[in-house]
Length: 167
Image (cartoon, rainbow, N blue to C red; front, side, top):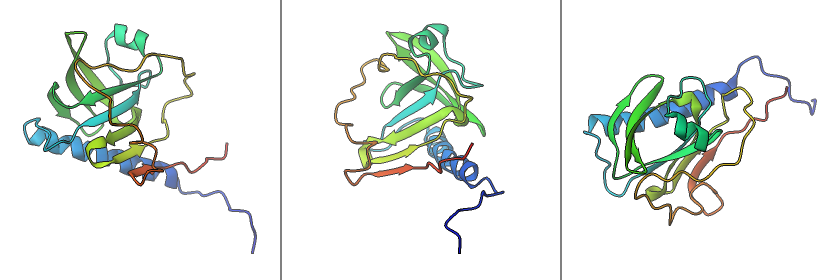
């Protein structure tokens, strides 16, 4: 028996990534069908690549977050629309109503800190050089209490998929 693992001709990592992104779509779709109301204490942190194909955000947000941005869906969001390939949502930034459109392929993390659930994804965007940026600040959102929500070391339900592609 050989210690070398043969290269797979089946793209398992891509298939798993796509399936996990479908979880995000299903969760958001259920919120949309429910009238846009989050049940209980549920709220979502969604991180995405701002330069990914299909991402539609205002230029000032793209300038502020040239690589990655995290939005919060909690109290103040509207017009959540879920499609097969992504979603759009209205949020307020510095008291300015803004509509964002985000493909599921651009999402790099989805966290629901109310239940210690999180998913992290490999970026499916061509290599974009990450640049330093400020943390996202939706109006009146508090990031307190979410420390460790993505760590997985504290017993939370974070799923990280990294198959270490050979290039």
